[in-house]
Amino acid sequence: MSNPTVIEIVSGSPAAEAGLSVGAELIAVNGVVPSDVIEYQQLIDDADPEITIRDGNGQRQLTINKAVGRPLGMRLSSSIFDRVQTCDNHCEFCFIYQLPPGMRESLYLKDDDYRLSFLYGNFTTLTRFTELDLARVVEERLGPLYVSIHATDPEVRTRMLRNRRGATSLRWLRALLDHGVTVHGQVVLCPGINAGAVLDRTAAEIIARYPGLASVGIVPLGLSRYNTEADLRVHAPAEAAADLDIIHFWQEEAVRRIGRRLFFASDELYLVAGRPIPPRDAYEDFPQHENGIGMVRAFTDEVDALTAGGSGEVPVMTGEWRTIPSAPGEGYRAPRHTGSDPAADPGPVGVLTGTYGAAALAPLIAQLEQLSGKTLRVVPVENRFFGGNTAVAGLLVGADVRDAILANRTPVARYLLPDVALSGDVFLDDMSLADLRAASPVPIIVAPATAGGLIEGAAA
Image 1 (spheres, helix red, strand yellow):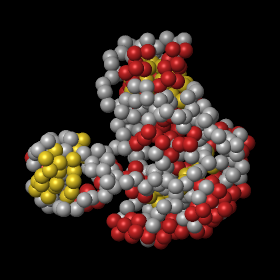
Image 2 (cartoon, helix red, strand yellow; image 1 turned 135 degrees about the horizontal axis):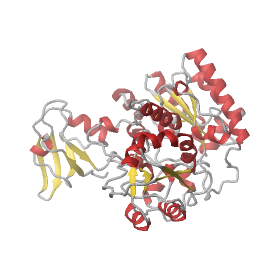
Image 3 (cartoon, rainbow, N blue to C red; image 1 turned 180 degrees about the vertical axis):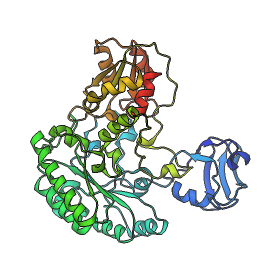
Image 4 (tube, rainbow, N blue to C red; image 1 turned 90 degrees about the vertical axis):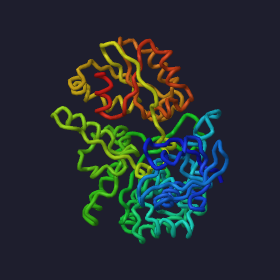
């Protein structure tokens, strides 16, 4: 059990009025030691909760004067106080196994915790799910949850998870749906393993057995140069096209049978297959936008809306931590950019992005230049650090960005860096934004990875 500490007190809140301060350690609420931020939030929603804390004045109890349901005004350092439920699968395609040694310890943590699924949209396989977990999820309505399916064939799923419970753990998916819990599914597609005919069977059985799923995202595996699994490989263009045909067929079947598409393919499959990105209605309400599904379409439509004089819509982030005032942003939900940006001279702007992002931006440059009033130069950053097919902006590392900047021969007055490459102003390879800026000949501005963010960053 690790007691969380206070990382933020809202000015004028009940917590501030009671004299609580940043750095205090939370021990209990109303005599109960909460196991996570979900339970904590339920406890402090009561009127006048009694908080046990430990700070510079020792351990003490404070009664907080507040009404039922009024936010306490205190944000905590972590979401799980007892112990994160770690993953006991050994998936051959797990990207954590493909990380190089020597990175920061938190990057190697594999979680399979339904609470993190509820809070942050993390995918869980349900192989460690229990009757007690189900009872809590149902009683407290902890949804939506996000479940990795991968394959419905028990033997294939067991092989992929390298866990004998993989053959039976989807019974929990059935139980969750039977109790009315909203669940989104995922299939990580591995050519020669669960693609092709296996994908065809998986889609058919999902419609037959789990039609209540809110969505099923189908994404290709990420493969780094550190992969040691001989059976893993990336999609060839023809394979990506064939799998898209299967997905589109079952989309149409889902529309016919249950009135909605249910299945959604990642942008990467379309880019690899050389096929156009579908129109907006093909993504319905973008239920798996952050899983790389519909990002290109949402960005393109945002540009079109801004060009027409409207305000572009950006899909809402997944996870319920935003609705829990005490929950911190953890993992890839942590604050991206925490500092200020330097002033920059007017002139051409270099837009740094991954190679997939560069392909998506290419046809939109004229519109973006019109909207920002700037000349834009897309600067693709090859991901040499991870290699393989890791071509998204969210996996860019500082060293590769620095090398791309130093190799760029097109004069620019500033660079725009998408914030998704950072976590607290630090890249995945532990290079700081400050170190990158010191190596760059021109200022670097961090911008949200949206059309509006790019335009505002370029125009600043």
